[in-house]
Image (tube, rainbow, N blue to C red; front, side, top):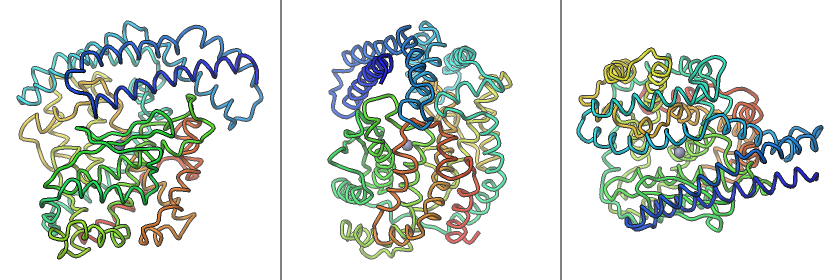
Length: 501
Ligand code: ZN
């Protein structure tokens, strides 16, 4: 290894370590820290972020990237060294484009906006949030201009969360989905009473809920010797190494779904991080390649597996032993239908698998129009309600249940929503390919065995870390670009059977 490459690796390893220390502070803040620690923690984390940014964007990093590139020129594209340089150069050039004072201004504005949004949401008062949102849109347009783009300004923001993805790709993806999904949801909507989910709303002791969900994710392959689970207000997954991956959950003592499906979801994120190639440990290639690919892993375990009949054929009798009074006399079919109930609703985070992407489409279209100057912030609530009518067939009675519901815009997270849909579509595309190459997987799931599936995901997705950008990774894993056919096939077959549509 050349001197420059050695020096670059050591520098990037330090940057990675500093970021991971910050993630540990964040995990502690959300799971352990007493409220009194907030002010000190904000100091710790901001100095920590500043160090990361300064060290990474320093001229010295750029000099080492250039010198190291000369040393490894001719190295195999797939090699760790060539991949490291590709990703380092991309991150470096991108981070350097935005001036530090603009970064600071975005942070300041969004930090202040959070409280304003939370109050506006509580009081159903969009007007009080309008000036903040206006300012955030203006700043994000400036950020996008710094990054630069060739086709659409929204591309620049999308790229932050989903490298390589273009607005045109998302538009095409949703166009295909929309024509099939809207009629499907309408048809189910007419038969909404065909499924009763009251069995899920009973008294379920949280400790027994925890024990059951842990049993499931152990069988999935979530490795507790390199991970743990804690409680948090908003569930998340984080990691400070492939050997220290943590997930969190929350419990509703009167509703089985949040902790159960939330745990399967976060374990999916966690297993991705635990499966990153050992040789990538500690450098910038360690970690998931994008939010969309990450979400494909969580959704696959939560929905494709966790809401399937095969899975519950094995696990429902076990669940009944945990809750004999509540579920002892419920049959598998009633339970299976209950966990797959579809009902158009106002709130995205409570949406079922069929309506979820319709919520995302609305947000995507509105964001694109806002950035392109085709929609004014003051007209946003009306535009929201009109789309809600078109896509979901319902209009929220208040802005609290409509345009004010999500935290994302107040945090400046514009360009983020499409990654949720990418995760949904990709989960079905990957699962279909895994089964095509390993036809025994469905039978194994009915026996509560997941090793073949996890191995396929490890080999095709997890172990590569950030080596490949999502479009390339998806093509390598499935032989084609991201598509919506697999997901629609999955939904139509599942709901066709449950609802007779
Ligand atoms: Zn997730």
